[in-house]
Image (cartoon, rainbow, N blue to C red; front, side, top):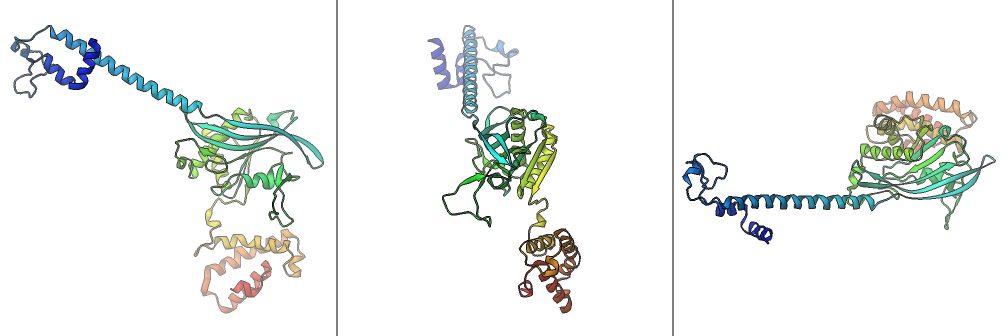
Length: 381
């Protein structure tokens, strides 16, 4: 009852007012603007003959009780915070489904295990940060997994899932397309991919956070995973976690990236080595973009025109659109001729611009048309 009364009184009046009522004659030294200074017990205590010292034990009891109450309140809040943290950690888990299959590659039957699902990414305190979706394929009946390569693959964007490399070229299944590589009429279907590299390496297709089925944890800001370094860190931490859980640290490890994924792969090689001590055996760059000036056809930037030119020649050769003398050349020799023109006379012409004479201009129009299979009329316009 006394405890409840003190709690109630302290709550209504405040501790300082209660002290004043219990020790009304305590005064500070002359000149100090505090008539109830409890810390000044020198000469002032002799100036207070009316002090009732029986009230002091009650005051001390009050202070002790209030400190205990505050401690219990703080402990209760800390416990509540800890419980919420535990709930946050335990409520999110990995969700992975495993199946087994087989496929014919190069005339041999290959048995493999497929895993699909999400791995929970946590911070250093164990709180959920994101769920990263992946699909992995592992060859079965492998004698020594330490010698079996494993490749982590992803597409680019940034903002793309790994579906294109997965169901387009590398995985054991691919989307059925027509002879021109275009999507067929629905219903769409998957077929065995006879060109899959699963016979050479295990595969792990990764969807970076905010792509595919990968999402930040509840309450987490997606922006912490967006950006070059943020993206590299989250994907790199996933690779480290997957490698550890699957016991693949001793396996040869590769990265395969497409488009912006080549930028990610290049940055990951350094991050994995410096942050996790993981050394890669190789990187596959598909449609590489390590310098964005090489792909941006902006005014004043001639670099992509020069670099793309040999590819135009190769494309025309493949579709048999070149003049007979060029069409009869082997591709290697033809590409050499195209590069020499693109990096020499063509680059100079782009640099000179309208300073070219009429004759020089017409000569370049003819040569560009000749090496690309386009008409002079189209090139000039």
